[in-house]
Image (tube, rainbow, N blue to C red; front, side):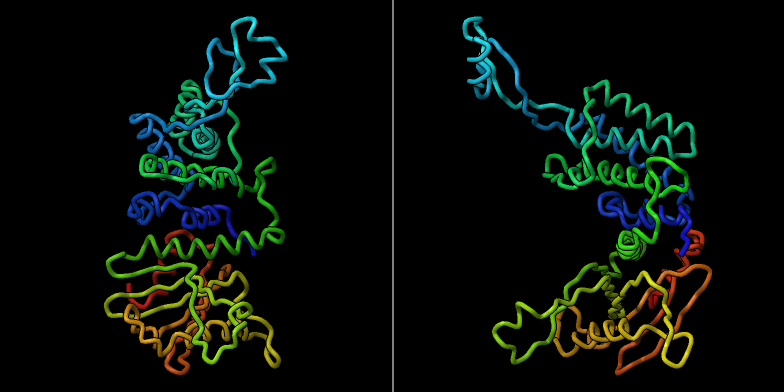
Length: 356
């Protein structure tokens, strides 16, 4: 499967945290630019500009220094070895507030990275200017790894940093999928199929969360469904597998539930007596999701008894859209063409909803 780099960027945009930390209407607009780096750079630059007005957040860092008075804890070994007391000095270990925090270093690196990707010279200059300003303010350390930045936690006092950091994460990620040789080359799809599968699943959920009106729809991702177990033995809970859906979309009025299972494989496989057949295992899995929720008398979702299911596969230059009803449940098998333009992708995904 050959996916255009631009569409991988689109998937990364929808799978990112930008929709959670910025105004969803900004990303859900129909007239989004085709160049995703330009959009991300604009969001990042605007976030950095807002933080500059209110001063960047600071963090504590540990320092070791020889001082004329005690600050923090005394480093007795260094003090004794260098005979500092005779000079009226003492070696100390202490913490101090600094703007050179891992978070700000990561944002500075993201500004420098995305400036090389954007198509607008003025926007690239703006990003480089903000990165230079950060260096002048003392943000000069090496940027942290993605794993380190993922461990960042936000409180009420620094929640304003979330949009900035979400844009910075995506800006750094955008440097990965490129067809050019160099240090930021994307791994061969055969070797990163797990990453693409997770990206596709998160992107579909993020798309519907952004484009469906919150007043009319509820979009849940990674929901765990419970099995209607009866007469269970004492140890079954430790060995029985859980049931986790990719995406569950509830429409408020008229009430309806749609369970979407994303599969990053071809929608068809070779059957026993035919060249093309839907994958039986996927059908069993989706049908189990739907039937297991019947008869629960769930007051929050009374329509679960007649929930519909959608198996959504990616495709290139082809379209499949078949459906059938089995024991009161509508099952749909569809593809989305990942080689299409963003406008076509958007229209296709919205067309798969019961009513939009």
